[in-house]
Image (spheres, helix red, strand yellow):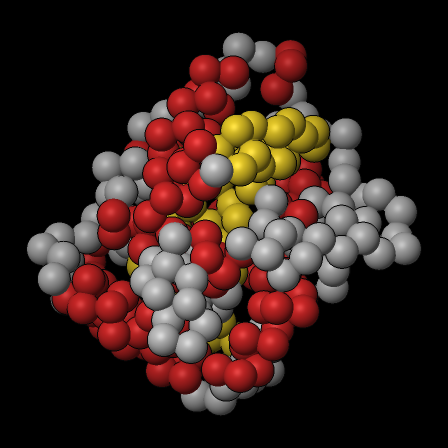
Length: 268
């Protein structure tokens, strides 16, 4: 499973591919570039605003999502987009989505909390500091947001699922909700499980999703084990966990696209 996932990461997300499709991002999606001093680079940021944003004075919850190039536009995605904008438009969702692009060769570094013996990485602390200390303050200043933890979500798939869960542990006062799709816990299995076990309390609302055909049994086994650890830190009666294992689901955008709507509705 590890070799399959690593090859997938490198081929799918290691570089910024452009396919032959037309632009499919809705008019609700725009983008900007921001300096990321913690990463010694700049980042392209995709922004989805609800349809009635310009016509109201309301404030909105915010979802911060990794792999922004795969969320809204078929032209910038490699193997198909998540259709986040179309899905949210279809249910008149009242939320802002901030997509952080990871089309470069630093994806593995930025989305992994600890260095892997073979695949290296381990720069997630600086990446999360960029989100919390640079990007979120910019977003809160320039958009009408509900900035408290209960209205702030961190969401991703694969390595993005791993770093989202890690972000919830490290910044529990910032991220009150997490979308954790097909999390690659295997990359830092010992460290992330030790961190969870040593966490005294865990109040973050988490939506776990994976498929049962993502490689071998590691994904489902790790997800079940992490859910157990999370439940050990709080009463199950709080209804703050949701776990979905999709029969036949594979490690790809199709699984995450099809699971996005139900996950959003449960989290928000």
